[in-house]
Image (cartoon, rainbow, N blue to C red; front, side, top):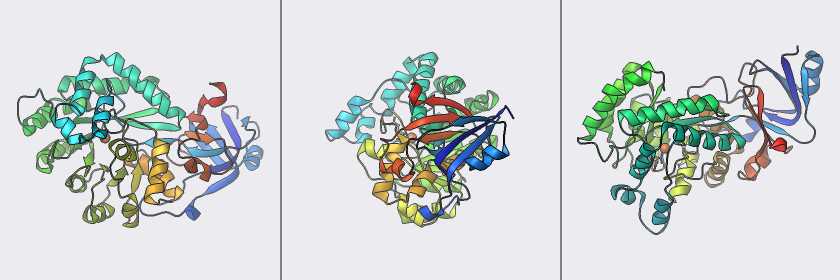
Length: 416
Ligand code: NIG
Ligand code: FE
């Protein structure tokens, strides 16, 4: 029994259990256990229920008794970020707010290319250090799993450097990092050839290496006028799928086209979708592809939010991620952004929480987290309140007081 730890009582444990992957959700569907206990064994949740029942049932377990008000959520999951990078784009932000558009800045050699230059200049060790620093900040905000894209290397060698850095950072940071290859972010300015030739070079010379070195099992592409067209990406995704990679797409951010490619390729997610129309929304809802709203990019660029309400009402699956990156989404605060999206898009609290827990887990093909239930990883975000509604109501200002990862208390506000 000594390898069992019982934590509680929590005023509320919001389990996120037994909810559908797709469609609208109402707060009455939420399973909340009051005066709850969570029993942990070997990194996982062994049991969840009333604290007093578990105490009797597992007499002999270590008990970590909590005093005062505490609400427990599953560890939050950020399914889309670009937190491995060098440099800053504060100048871009200033220029955009003075009237230049994101695309104009990119076309003038700023934008993504600026970050590519700084990322290429950074050593792998610098990238590891920066990634850990950003991931650990997110961890303290309750995020226990973070997807991290490459895409600021844009050559076989530099993309590999980024993906090694993300994998190395994963070994020491507090959260789990899920690496994704975004070599198809845009054609680099120094590549002497067409978009097609660049993509050929990547799939011929980078994909086998990714597989061999087990650096990622996810391939992303930016489908946009300033990046790659649906036609250019199709052969790239075909090669990716042949190797068995999961597909994810930066879709419909400034112009439509990307989400249809995502659906056609049975992509695991289509992310952004700020300009998706009813046609794209309905097609997504009928598909297996999860829509990921990125409110941080809307806030960073000052543009419309993803039509999250419409996606849910059409029957789609909606996750919410921060898109934390130096260009379009510099804030990097998932809980704040998800709360704000909820207020603007009229999402129920359970829809918002689903988007940053189990629906986000599914968008990353992770079946062992996002829900508080027996057999799941004991990743817990705990807040100092007795009412889960306070968490989104405070729009990110109520931070977790404790965060557990794999059954270990890895952040305790009282001790930091
Ligand atoms: O998700 N849209 C393209 N890619 C990133 C932005 C990257 C950047 O501007 O550095 C995004 O918003
Ligand atoms: Fe992105």
